[in-house]
Amino acid sequence: MEQWPEVDKAAAERRRELVLQGSGVDKRISSCGGLPSSLYGLQLLNYLEVSQCPSLTEIHGQIQHLTNLQSLVLCRNKLASVPDVLGALKSLKVLDLSGNSLKDLPQGITRLKELNTLNVSCNCLEALPDGLSQCTKLSTINVSKNHITAFPPDLFSERLDLLSALVASDNSILELRGDIHKLSALKVLDVSNNKLSEIPSDLSDCPKLKEINFKGNKLSDKRLEKMVNGCQTKSILEYLRGKGRGRQCEEGGDADNKKKKQQQRKKKGKAAEEPDEVEELDKMVVRVLHVSEAPTALTVKVSAEVKDVRPYLVCCLVRGMNLKAGNALKRFLIAQTKLHEDLCGRRTIATIATHDAQLVKCPLVYEVKPPTQLKIVSLGRREMTAVELIRHLHLEADELRKQKKRQNVTGLHKYLQLLEGKSFYPCLVDAEGDVISFPPITNSEKTKIRKTTKELLIEVTSSTSLQTCKDVLDALIIKMAELNKFTAEHQEEAGSDGESDGAPEPPAGTDASSQLVVQQVRTVDQDGNLKVVYPSKTDLSKEISNLTVIWS
Image 1 (tube, rainbow, N blue to C red):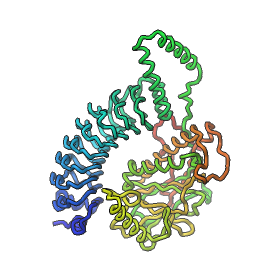
Image 2 (cartoon, rainbow, N blue to C red; image 1 turned 45 degrees about the vertical axis):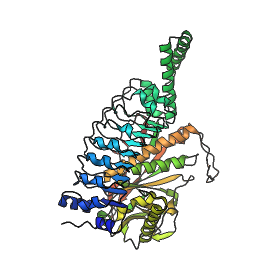
Image 3 (cartoon, rainbow, N blue to C red; image 1 turned 120 degrees about the vertical axis):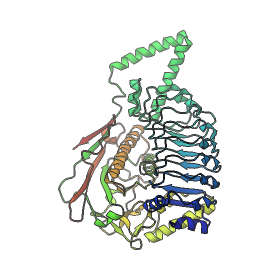
Image 4 (cartoon, rainbow, N blue to C red; image 1 turned 90 degrees about the horizontal axis):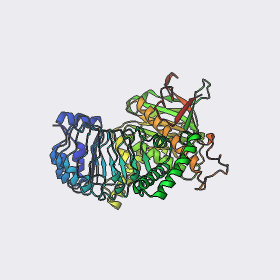
């Protein structure tokens, strides 16, 4: 009989949170033919996570006994089905079934009256169950990367008046119905990379909509398709609103309205003779500088010991990112957090770290240290060893649970389990011997980016693959280009938090104001042999219509 010390400890200490993940747990699941029955006796649990276990193909119906569960995370396994009795978990608020092999969802999910977050992304779903409108507290739905062809009839319901985010990218959705305007709280809508040909003008009636993504759809309105690839949400909604008014004029048959419409057509005809403003709507430009062979070029040496801990690392330097204006820095940090949650799989797949390059003392070494010898001044804290930091974070997590009665922990606390059982921790060390990065937990205060940062060193580490690091860094640089373009177009006031150095901002709208310059960084082994250089010619190659990559 396999031993499950984590389950025994949770029972003995009457814990309310349990995380089971990784290869060690997976081997036990394979040996036992599933999770231990004792797990389903932990009736005090309000947070249960079982993840990264490809041997886990089903969940036993006994899970219905965990009636106090508020968060159930079963991501990145190989679940082929989940039991209908999930509907008995009346306290459940968060259900994460992402990264499995599910072809359908049980009808029981629609009985979860307290559910506010549903994540079923990265599965094989062809449809969602009818009746989701009964889950009236839903605020976030993520069904991306499936095979869904249509939204269920009742999803766009006035009953879902708390639904603020609907993510359905990378599916085969054919139609977005006009009754989507009934989702009065909708702020984020992502239906990129589907098979939509039309965007309903009714979408402009969603009063709180702030972010939409329709890229990768072949729209019949080619002007709108260009706008989708190049414009901000506000511009697209205004265009849709105008189309809606035009349709009302046609249907009303009012003579004055028809006359106005004819005048608009004349104006439109004149505009057509001029260069298409959408075509020229600032293509995002990323210029890549080849690393020189000079000894001053930045390289990162990787020690052999990282092979058994967190072996993969890619880096690059980025200049031209305007973090000074308005909320630009805040938007950048939010985008990084979102990538950590999604593409990086909550840091289990990869971790991003950003540094002020002018504060980095080169050369750099990526190595491992025992927890007692790894010292870091983590963001917003004093210097402490990794052991002290982890202990401190555990105490903070326990205090949060007591004070706020959370079903889950937030911030750095939710990543602590990623280091459990490790004898050595990975770190990036500068020329002065200081640890500037401790993945997947934190960066150092020493190289913290601020509004005045003019050049960034970006690192991505992973225990999965080198290509994973490159994919994440590609996505981050593309997002940085989008944010820089947004900042340049909106001309926000610089230095609003008092960190301005007094230097004047370049005028928005000029090419230089939004162009990013990415400089290659080489990663070498202990003998100086090249391991990887990023970006290479095969990187940043994703086809994005409004992105231009220039190799210098």
